[in-house]
View (cartoon, one colour):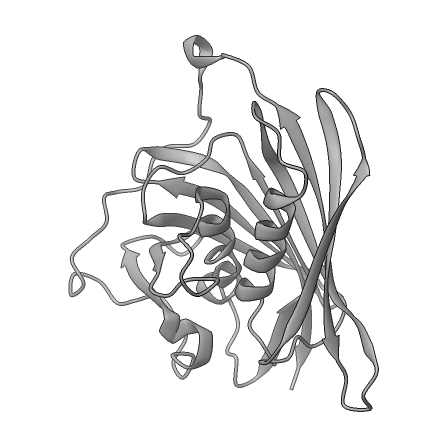
Length: 235
């Protein structure tokens, strides 16, 4: 089964390339995970769900072959693309910036023991000293989403953001599962650096549902937020 980051990056890429317009960009994208995404060939398609001059809704889906030979969507996305305007004179970020990217040996790398396999080996993670409430890391992808193609700023965010659930884990993964069923990212600014910062907070309710809430950063400061719903179960 594939980690959630590569499928979300592929969907973000498809949305970004769907009927692109100068002077407009993706501001919010939600991915719904409909089933296991295989580590293998997949098909991605995108379309304009709701056209508009200033605001339009783009949709996309990821289709994969099932063990019985049938093909079905294993993930889908919807995204709002908004016409841009000059608001450079009134910019504001509600959250404080993260400390700079640390040297590799300064702090541990922030991932639960035993998780350094598969997708996690395709990114570099450097932890920043945090506290018992918020886990802070910097992440950058080490591979391309599509071979031979430079990663766009939007796709760069989606290529790493799904690690937030693991970074913010409050439970022992040997005793509990806490899979996220979705991923929503809102960006008030696109990143301008290769490193993406995550300040992650996880909350767990009494009935098997949790949330993972993340402030996203680049090296100049906050850029947006990420939210994941968690299905929490004892093993």
